[in-house]
Image (cartoon, rainbow, N blue to C red; front, side):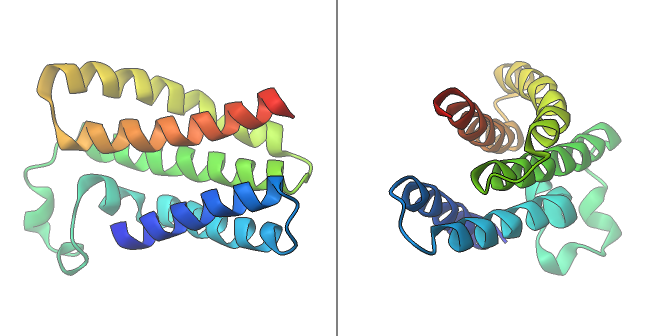
Length: 149
């Protein structure tokens, strides 16, 4: 799943670059890869963020050492990242509603980012490293386009 996320992320960034260069087909590339990322974060974000392998999704043992707060945080992060990704796709495609999607998804992301940074400084956990990187990339993409629009 991490490979699919990375490949989709690279294709998404290439689509953004091609969109700015006004290359035909860039919008299609951007839309498909952005919506794949949004789907991964929305439906499979809990497994991705908690680093649970596909074969262990339905095993009770894989969730025993994970606190309910961390599970809740992973679910909220997945929904918020998905909302921001759809907002970014809408923004690059000049579709209405992108602003509210970025605000609705970005507000919890900023709170999660602050909490993740504080927790990372305390524990140095890989869980928080992954969250910080994903949230920072989505926020930077949204802010850069808002600034240079």
